Length: 475
Image (cartoon, rainbow, N blue to C red; front, side, top):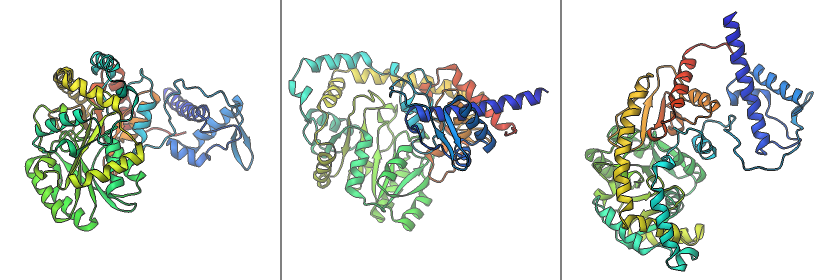
């Protein structure tokens, strides 16, 4: 009797999730009155439930008057279209777990929804008081900063500061070689527009930042990957991929790799650059996590002198995601072409954001914030590692700094299933295969240690893992 009750309870939960997914689609106008619902077979595959579960969910929605059945045709929405509301609409359970899954779930979640799968720090960890002071200072300054477009290259004073900061990593880049952008993502987008055509091949790490996949797909590039190790890309396989596919670009992190937290070694960096020269490969080095480092890692741009390497970065992770300010550092003869593309796609620069970043970099606020933040993250990293190990989740490595732990789940547990379960509990996790082009990271999960303070996160994750280990009876 107890076993039957447990099965019935699990079945009702699955039915409720399917019903909520349909209501969600109607609420955000993905389905409007008269629209046909997904077929039972297709929606069962999307939701990873049995067809009988979807049938029962649809029948209950018919009983509620939300949808209606047309024999031989399917199910259709009949609920009246409510006025569009921008209130919290909840997670989208029906979305496929693809490279945009984490971004959509994290960005659309409310402030109260735990997001250990997201790639940014909690608002309370950011220098809010310093940002407010900087904005007040800007409001009393030059009117043009508040109202005008920026120059094509961007605020000179900030580019000068960035040039000096890059010199601290051994990278020689004059202010005239630095172009300000609105983000690191815009920087990669401009570079892709400048250097590749649809159908060109681009190499990424496996795993890598999931938005690289999404952005390259938008550019209709052919994407290939190379396994990433604790010291950088697997150099032997890197050479094989270059010989076989002849990619135009390689996009990577050198310091504090996302998602693994690994650090490029000098030996690997040297071998990668030799291969890049041999196969005429351009490297895009995303240095967005540089300021989290305690001890600087080798930089490809420093070894290369910005000949075959383009370095990009931004302040979204360390200062504010609302203050949209990034940069590109490139060889001099590429700057004009990149500027033309910047004007064509976004016209002028964001003067206000650049002015605010400059103010915080030069008044000491940013330095003090980062010193405190590195210490706080180190404590959070140690605590998170210990708590995850207690529920049989093992970090792949112990990163020297940063916010990410790349972890292996217990054997036989699919991270996507765990993430879907957590989403029903209104918690956003980051399953491994969204980072993996080869889809070989199904047993991995990326955890943001700064987003693990809510006790429910590990409790829900543990429950999902235990449920995944038990055979269940599908309805």
